[in-house]
Length: 356
Image (cartoon, rainbow, N blue to C red; front, side):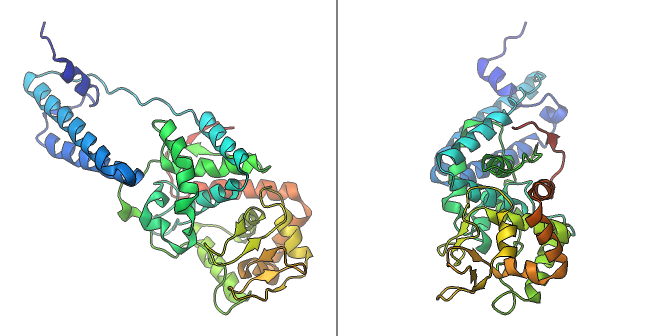
């Protein structure tokens, strides 16, 4: 019986038993795969990219040499070992613990999941959550993502490191639904199976996320047109636009990020329909300050953006504002459906996944 060196047995378990071992293109394919893994390591961990690159170079070279040796010896490699299944319930529990340790992180994690998904274009079939591209600096510098590079993205990194096989794309989207539930919102259906892109060239152009104000300063028909342009591009209708706007019940604006300032509601870490009751029930006036045009309530404790106030000016939008202000259960249901749709834009081959 032929004895196989230990290093060869180890290396063979990293390759699938296919005819690729005897293909002349094997070495070129191995080189391409190695380069891809190097780029993943550097982009995921820029602070220690060189160390990881060296490790991959060494391990990749050993595997390639072993494969060629196997080819020459006529040895058939055994099937590759399957990657251990990710425990998504445990991942979600860690996200919930993160939010409970600091409730103010919850809205930012929702923003990360929203912005990682909201780049989808139904015509070109580009963008969306599938590739986890928001982790690339090329996307984090987009205007709508200001602040995420120093908050939500690094907050989730320890969880990513804890679970082998977990993709950034799945982590970011699960972060959104888990945070919403942790803050009192509905349990939103979530599916796993997103595969991370490895090339920053896959980042979509800036400008695909909604702006707070379009056209002349203040709410006017141009803001309604802008909202429809952005959301229709993804495949959303007026009802879904208003439902998703209800996420403004969470969080606040920061002058250091968007330039705007203040919370939409007095309960910014609780998911509810207060955004709609306050939007439709309070008297909103232009805020007197040196910052961009925004609205404030009489006491100056709350704020609304021009893209919020336009929901009252447009008859089609207003109809749904009134519905959600009057019926929180209807809002929860419609928001959950719209948010699930948002997170699944541009995805494929997802699997039903129990996470809560």
